[in-house]
Image (cartoon, rainbow, N blue to C red; front, side, top):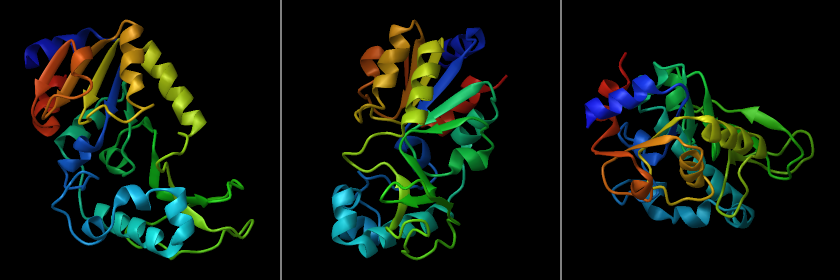
Length: 237
């Protein structure tokens, strides 16, 4: 299966890697479905905190929760899967992850569909954005432009994906001739719809995941296991 995947990679001209939480989970980044984490992760329901309504109800709690995530991410490092993807500048990384591990690995083109923990933006959408130091994040504060609260620049449940990023992701997915689907259950839409979009455009689909997923039915090849073990031999020159 690895040899077959390597052959598809060698023959591809435009490759997109569509990744999800499983990619960074191998580095130790907790996921929403992880029941064995500590601190804010087990004390509160992330699906309630990761909403605009939750932020308006208790902005301090929500912001503290995201700052906890920021500090936790600085303690983990890119794994072999991140590094294998970053070593291929010809691959466009379209990810649902909001961490910075692909960037730290050296990936040149990363489209973060669900935003990033490394930036705060104005809740009132006046356009103001500020970079955030993940290891030492700032406290909850007001937007210097309009006075509304600043919030993490991430997509919460019920919110639209950033239009510019989404449109670019659609373009590259339609144009690619190979899509690597890595570490995602392919259950969160509209992001997961990019897999079908690539397939409809004629792309081959390689799925790499520990378990069957929503992408299984679309796969030309499905490799079961950890991305950190499977991606390096598939992508090596």
